[in-house]
Length: 404
Image (cartoon, rainbow, N blue to C red; front, side, top):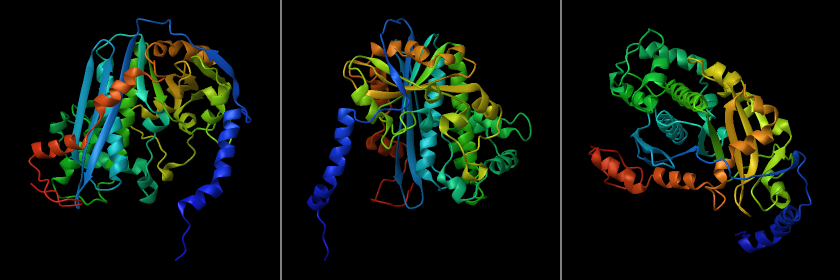
């Protein structure tokens, strides 16, 4: 038997890894897109600060994937909103990716409900980046030859004959049920509940219901569009905060940007001033780096105003920031109207927007997001309790059959 143990492998790879780390620590490699650093202070007080996060957990049975998704949003003044979604994934394709969409739908909806109840100005803090929150294409699209436009046309035909009263919807115009579903449903995610409604009839096969994935995507993008518009109307800026970032666009090196920024950044709160083309992206194609055609699934659903909004009306201001002395370097992205005049001077603009975060980030990461993460966390006990409340059996282990 041939054996290569851990010690042998580690000794061989060690010089490579150690050299990479030493080059980073010594700052031997520069960041080509870095202009400098701008000091931050936290003097902008009295603004609303909203934090939102979500969590999900699932159980795989031999016949179903059962899930529980949750989202929580709260403010520094004590206002909060909490929503849960429970169900089985229908049709049973790409379950984990689609449960992530359900969670993102809940996050956008929960944040939107809270924004509607408060006054600006202020900020909404969201964990992660626009690339993860707004990305909609999934491997199942290309692999199963699912075209977004064709899927939505199928949805329009099918939904005309479906009773959607459980979602609080009565289609207003024949052929516009998809827009009614994503915009007017009183239960979220409406698309996930729609799958379970259709499965009760036993009329459709899994292949027949693949168009549901397009409706799930449309619902997610519609709710994020609604959140952004309502926030902007109240002078509230959505800010995505990522603890880890693998982007290498600003520095253009083989390592992530943060690897080059750490040795160069000052220890006090500051932000990286990058080239304008690295800081400002207008339109979802530039924000997400789209390059595929509809066959790849990278195609904005043509529902309501989605396509115009995401291609023409939204912009991202992105940089790296240190929020506390010697704290971690975070990736931050603010989503703003593309008509914002301050985009001509993005460093000054984002420095002003980030001021409220300095006083709430003693560890270098916003305390409000840490609280949101804990409130939105889904435990295995939560999942099991939801099954018991529904009167479903937990007998057996592994991929057992879900039973009444």
